[in-house]
Image (cartoon, rainbow, N blue to C red; front, side, top):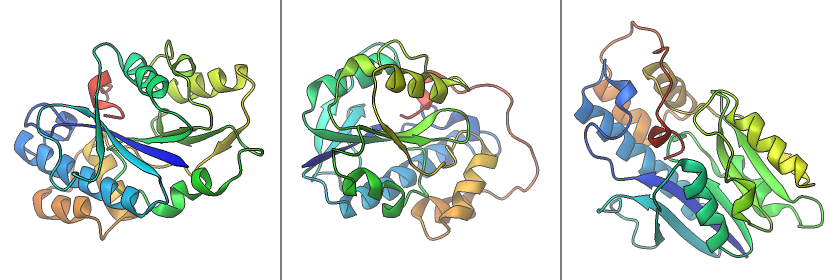
Length: 223
């Protein structure tokens, strides 16, 4: 019995994927964020999960998510929000974000296939030093509370926390986490048939420009 959770937020213009502007407008950035959520939900529906959950920030849940239970995010930092989630759920639980629309069933398969006597946790590293997935056989929020989030060493801190707890960790494939337009193009190339890629091809009419050197805010990472 496995629960899979997608952490996401309402895709309001100016509130999501703001680092895609420019070259995208804020409205276009919100549009590709909405497409990324739909791609993620589509993959999650294919997983052999006993329960599917949205860990949601906002008022209007994504279209077509009626088959997902909704847990509203509490206030506080991302570590507190994730900690509260893992305190609330029971049994093997796998968390994924909304920023990896190129995600495939195969990327997450080990977290559903591997027996509990071999692995305690599943960790999906992101290219920016964070993580795109975290699965726990015996979920507890203390494994996340206090981990510094939205830093280029967040993943290293989280892995250290798991190791200090004596957990056996299985590493999942590294994925590009979409923060900048360059990230978006890489994710679209990795999943060219996704709704995200289709939206980006339609909206991204530029080819120049490098990644923004600024860091994402906590609200933009994993959610």
